[in-house]
Amino acid sequence: MRNIAVLTSGGDAPGMNAAIRAVVRSGINSGFRVFGIKRGYNGLIQGDIQEMHMSSVADIIQRGGTILRTARSEEMRTPEGIAKAVNVANVFNIEGIVIIGGDGSFAGAQKLTESGIDCIGIPGTIDNDLAYTDFTIGFDTAVNNVLDAVNKIRDTSTSHERVSIIEVMGRHCGDIALHAGIAGGAESIIVPEVEFSVDEICRKLLQGKSRGKLHSIIILAEGAGDGIDLEKQIASKVDMEVRTTILGYIQRGGNASAVDRLLASRMGAKAVELLKEGKSGKVVGIKENRIFDMDIHEALAMKRVFHKDLLQLSDILSNNIGD
Ligand code: F6P
Image (cartoon, rainbow, N blue to C red; front, side, top):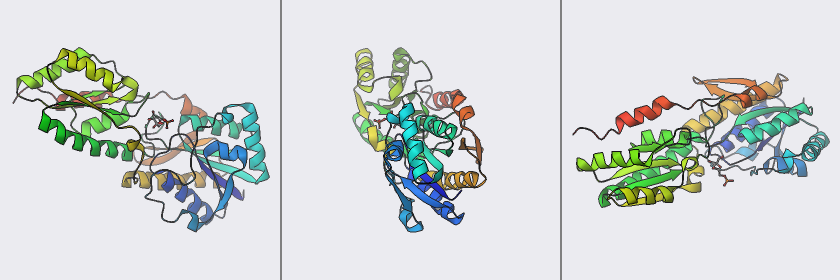
């Protein structure tokens, strides 16, 4: 194999650039010609492909977003789209592709693998919603972005003695809420994986109020409910001021954290190593700080296990009983 390529697909995540850099540089170091595919699978289908050099990835290790741009490709979900993608890869003599993205992107990688293109997936999504790996690239930075906001909101929430609801990303996965909630000392964390009751949240607020605590932070994952709606429900049940902040895309931007840069560098190098060994249809992951690979179909079939113990820990640490 001489020519390999790299693309980013799905929602962007800080650390994707560090992963691109690792693929390009370790690829060239291993004797490959490395190509960059623009705008995810759409760029592959349209032939928007350029050769990359050591210097193409200079000064990007820290930057959020993705220099290759990204897209959620509808065409890649169709047999015609896949056929076009395979054809373009053949025209460019691209025999292996590293796909940086989430589960939707891996499904495309699986199809390409079945069509004879060697594909390796790297988990890049802020959601941390892939069951087979402990962490995805971008998650740590997103949690830190949320924490920055929590710290700031806490200042004003305390000053005004208000309840602050902070709505964070995570349609099906509450990991951003869970990790940022514990690290930010939130009183309540609401995630899509666990049913919650507004009455129970209000009970906690009133318990706090009874001992003079008039400010509280509630972290709500978007998939568990709507922040404004929750604000109205709480305000109708307790005599406290409630304000909601929806963090939105702020979570997905900014310089990648050290953790994400390191993870991306290790995973990028591993993906190239696998292509060099002639492997295909694999995804790279991290477990107990060890980088490993497994079959894409196996990884996609795995069910996520939600860390209920962490939610319980948060309950203990935010307990409003006592002095
Ligand atoms: O998959 C990452 C993610 O940021 C989710 O947390 C969020 O729900 C979604 O993408 C937003 O998608 P879009 O960029 O299409 O608005």
